[in-house]
Image (tube, rainbow over all chains, first blue to last red; front, side, top):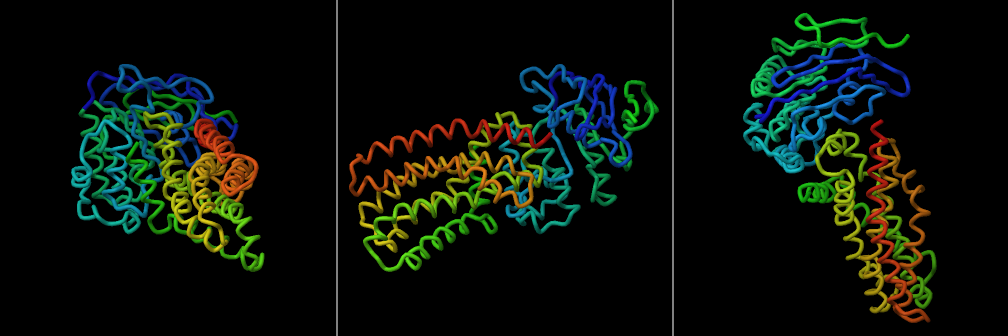
Length: 223
Length: 219
């Protein structure tokens, strides 16, 4: 899926919301095939961190860089799928129309909308208006959107919110394939995603490193 | 980009899109004027172009609140900001789609509604032409206000108030050109050219301003 080896790195990153620093000194480095789980209490700044990484929000300090992207992926935003709390789908359009729009808008097409729906087990909803779907189904359509366009970096904010156990397992499979194909994954979550060998980063807590590496660390926010 | 244009036009025309509401509002304003003014046909035909223009201005401003708000609410605007295309281009396409779904029906309906104001055929054609040339300026200028208020609940009215003063030049030259078509000392082309210039000017400036406002909203 990804041509060359990529390296996504944050150095001494500080994130702030409304002028209040939530966390500072965040550093991590992810190579192709590596994933990072961001944990922390409610309001610790998980979503803010993901938005900063995606380039949607300015950092209060420090930098996020993507190396090895070449011309196709000049910066993190261009190389990333961002799955936020909202699903970015229009209730008045059908599922297929929604997916076809995002595929065409984002460029670098990968799976067709029908293939993406099949992989998420929602082929039968293809011609239904998006508004008719349940919360979990809406989330799965949003996950299907990740498969439509080729992006080496997936930035996922509470990706399993609203999913049942089986859908979560299926999604873990998709994420596993993404990593196996040389992708990079950053997810903020409260629940285990069902993937092994991921780095972890806890924000809002005293210097804390993951169980299997020393790359991810952070400091508590200023009191 | 074509996909974005088609999606926005489709959303505008589908239920809850508001394109039809604008047309009905336009009709309502044009209809009540003869009731208020009285059956003075000479007076009505003289103020006809101005009434059509005011109705079109209000209908356009009314429909602007959904231009960015819906996409801001469901997170689509975030993904559009991350897209590889410049946000300015995305904004411009959204404005064009919005104009096609909400203003183009007004332009087409204007000659029909003008009949209710006892306007002569020449004035009907001239007003429709000035609306066709001038309403893109209203949409693009309005997009600045829509972008600034995209995350505000009930931001539509605020957006309308913000951009109304900026729309005054368009209104002045639009009505002036329509009136010049049926007499007066100024040739038809002079105010029409200024109107076209206003539209082209707003098409360049407004996407830059609106995109800057959208980037600021994310912060």
